[in-house]
Length: 262
Image 1 (cartoon, rainbow, N blue to C red):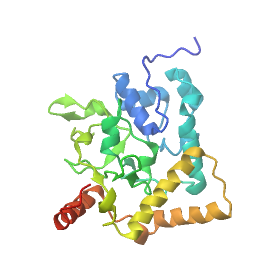
Image 2: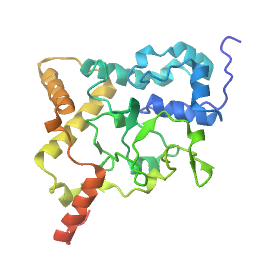
Image 3: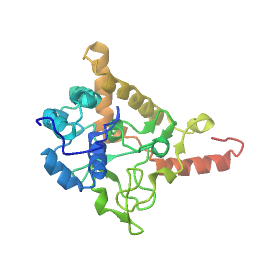
């Protein structure tokens, strides 16, 4: 009975899913609060599960959930790669009042059969979705609160009903998939300044490196690392657009050039 799991129908983490996202889905799938689940798995809330992955007892988690350690392979690679750039996860990773903050793509959540949050959505340099060519959302469109995970969805209500998935804001229950994406395709991309374009490009370059886990510091990649770090810690190099401000920019741009479309 050593490998017996007291849990049933345990969801496997998606290949690029944040551990914070998975913990939220896990507790929801078992019908218990996040705090009860974390107590069962013997996890401490102050640990950043996404980027302090090496501090988690994966053997214990594997036995208690019935999952294989290999189910967390990509999460391990991603967190290990990030440590080469940002050992203390203090420059690249977003936080909000000591909680783990995420951006998100409304179209990705809309297309997900089971909505989940990606690991890269926690990174300061990840400001856009390469699949849908739009800026990631920084806040809930209704209550303006940031998205922080893991979260106890059972304690959140909207219209007297519990929030049922990660496609809902954990603060007000609004559907995050209902947001009009802040697209920068085609002619609209021309309205963006060169520094902003470079920020988007560099973020898109960094993400595959972290997922591959084959990064080694040589002459070329060291210069790349210095560029990423500078953008992450220098206020002057921060990405100036949010999805909300870009939508306003689009509105003004289309009013000026009505013949252009997204």
